[in-house]
Each structure stands twice: as C-alpha cells, then as structure tokens.
Length: 263
Image 1 (cartoon, rainbow, N blue to C red):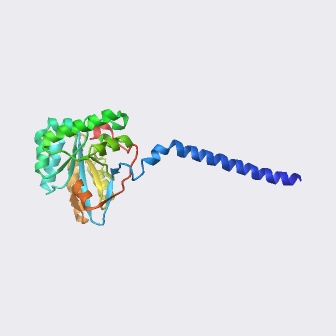
Image 2: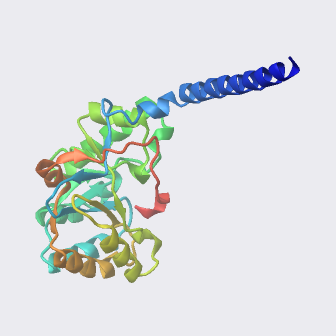
Image 3: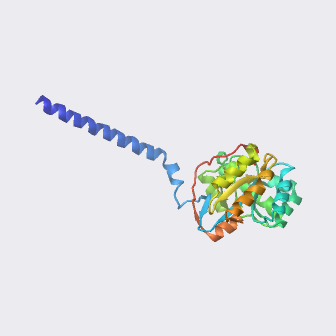
C-alpha cells in the first residue's frame, strides 16, 4: 500500500509540474502577444531584402548631416558609371543642400525620405511620429519636386505604430540586409569585405554619405567592381521591389541600429 502511494505521489508531482509549466508558458504568450503580432504578414512591415532568382542588388546611402562626403561619394559613383542607387535624405539636410540634392537627382539616383529630426521614432507619440514624417515629406517634395514613397527611419528604429503610420502616409519602410558599417571608419578593406561577402540576390545594402563615412568613397570602387564581377546588376530600391515579390519582410519592434551620428 505504501509503495502504491509513493508511485501515485510521484505521478501527481509530475502532473503538477506540467500544469505549472503550461500556465507559465501561457503567461509568456500573453505578455508577449504584442511582439508576436508584429510578425504577422497581415500588418504593415518593413522590407529588408527581396526574393528573386535574378542577380540584382540595391545600393543605398543615408544622409542626415555633413558638408564634405556626399559630393565626394557622388564623384566616385559618377566616375564608375553608377546611376542606380537610392539615397535616403533627412529633410533638414536636403533643405540646406539643394544643389547636392539636385545633383543626386540629375545623376539618376532615387531619393527616399530619412525622416525629419534624427530621433528614434518608436519613442515618440503617434502625433509626433506623423508630424516628423509629414514634415519630411513636404520639405523633400519642395526641394526635389517629387514626393518620395520610400522611407528609412532614422537609426533604422521603428515599432508597430511607426509602421502603421508610415503605411497610412503611403510609404514603404525600407531597411537593409547587408550593413557595411562604414560609419565605424574601420578601414576600406573591412567595408569592402563585409559588403562583398554578405551581398546576395535581392539584397539591400546600407551605406552612408554623411561626414561620418570617412572611408566609404575609398571602398566603393572595389565594392562595385567585385559585385559586378560576380554578375550583379545594381538597381534602385523601387526597381528591386518592382522586379520581385517582397520577401524577408522581417519586422521587429526595433531593429539593430548604428549611433545617431552614423547617418
């Protein structure tokens, strides 16, 4: 009889442990439900890369400050017959540098929004998020003569509210899959190796043309030559989206981001 109760007591103990574990798991699911829902394809999302069998790739540059690097980088692109890239411009910088913005457009490059103030929009109220995006829209449309429909949020930072408001304002949020980390100024060779080794079909590559990108102009020729040597064709982000079905719509409440001074 004692053995019987020991055996059943052990079974009861296991059952209790399983029940506690189930309750704990359910609690985690409940608490994290907001984070889980952001991965739903029924909700607004950001584009990191696209699914395609074609060897096409999008080179992108963020600019939010600086007086020196943008034109130097444009010089390099022009010298290497590159007219397929996308520049994400913060509106204060664009307003202060209309001649450089005009040059970007005249060279055939696509222009997207990089927001207004270089803040983390996930930390703002919804009214503030909307104001930042619409202010940028108006300024960029005035400077370029064309309303942008692509946006890369400052620092690559967003949450579900930012994605929803961006969509309501007719923007597609663009992130990146390959990060050059050129703002670190760790050497042209490291920038080249990071981009060339990680680049893949349908990729979106992040680079910068702000003054923090001190070695980008040195790395660019080799990056373009090596990727072209691998059979890649450069396209704008809009062309990338047009040619392919969007995939890799990986959405996070906040994506990994470089320091504010990087873009």
